[in-house]
Image 1 (cartoon, one colour):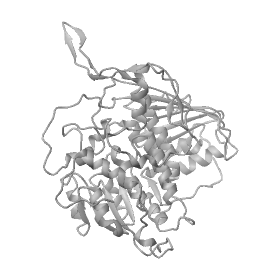
Image 2: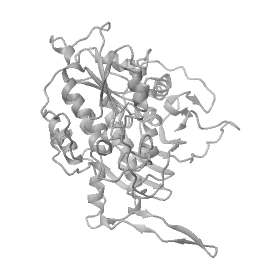
Image 3: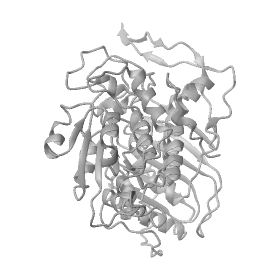
Image 4: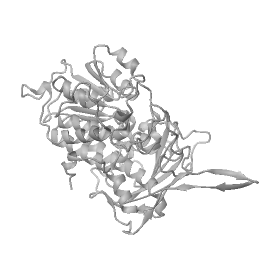
Amino acid sequence: MSKIKKGSTLSRRAFVGKTLVATAGFTIVPSFAVSGLGYKAPSDKLNIAAIGIGGMGFSNLKQMETENIVGLCDVDWKYSDRVFKHYPKAKKYKDFRKMYDEMDKSIDAVVVATADHTHAIVAAQAISMGKHVYVQKPLTHTVYESRLLTNLADKYKVATSMGNQGASGEGVNLVTEWLANNEIGEVTRVEAFTDRPIWPQGLPKPEAMQAPDTLDWDLFLGPAKHRPFNEMYTPWNFRGWWDFGTGALGDMACHILHPVFVGLELGYPTSVQGSSTLLLADSAPNAEKVTLTFPKRKSSSKLKLPEVKVTWYDGGLQPNKPEGWPDGKDMNNAGGGVIFHGTKDTLICGCYGRDPWLLSGRIPNAPKFRRRVVTSHEQDWIRASKETSSNRVETASPFSEAGPFNEMVVMGVLAVRLQNLNKELEWDGKNMKFTNINADEEIKIIMEDNFSIHDGHPTFNQKWTDPVNANKFAEELIKHKYSFPDDIFTNKPQK
């Protein structure tokens, strides 16, 4: 890997170009594997570095304090100051590439909790260096990036986990076991929702502001298109802006739809359609509805798996309460909920799969076949990181599962962003492309709504983007074509 000179500054183009080119040829193994055993005793401690520490990264690190926290990296040192103070012995960085360069041999594992749009480049480089990785949800910003991390994790045999902590909870276990035991019969329809967003969305691009000295704005932008700083973008609010986040769907579906993906053994959807409140070019809408259709599947249990439609709501929208719903019972459980409509009964659970119950009131007694995590989601990843790849018990959300699952989630985001095509979109999951967007179709999106009232009448003076080819626009959303050599993408997705 090319070294970064002390005191040097890099353009944003160089930032991402150097990052992605560097990852293609790594053969470095973790420090604990030097002996050739590839094993670290449970009593020995991992050396953990974290990138993106001001928000959920700090929460994750608090669950990892049984280990050595050796490196901390964040582009915003004001937001991260309390974390630096909490771990005074850890080395501090703004640029994760510099951390990787200087601390390579000192790091066994990496936590990634940056904004969504940089998850893939930070995690891919760590995996290619032979580091175990824990990546916050959503796993990646795009479908292709999810496929990439799935393949890299398989290639380098590192321990991986996405930060959807409900995967380690009892609720997901019970939902999966009840479905496998045919407790509610065949499921052809699922409805799910969240009460998010709780951050600003549905906004036009704000005016330029001067970035604070404590924030390296170019490093935050990373692979995203250049735009002037505004305090509306970061910290935390990045979720509502398309270039940096994935809206309420990307944020919360990784928690709420996980028992659906696992319990119904979903794979690639065959079609999707989305609608929303006002769709803007830069910001996710205030509320969305997305329906994904999955084909008939072969089951690993006695459950029959016919075609199923999974419908998602956010922004305060909820599905209708099914017949027999208890009067006065709130459908929202810890931020959302799921309804599995079966031919024999109806199964309901909350966010993270928590508190599953049957509408009939019956309490299932299904065989327990899923592994129980008795520590925490983070500690389970630490446990897996200390095991050899040949004898490793996978985490509750390894990239082999989290990658395909995240593809489903961010593909739903595509349906919202492509809704102006006014059609149900057919999806070829294997090849990651839509098959029914015509070659000459164009799409344009509102940039500013400019709504006003004149003499009691609503008036719109909308500003639209220029029309662009719909296929090219969709391809860019599936796999960002950044303006630099993307050699890391030579790790071809599996067919």
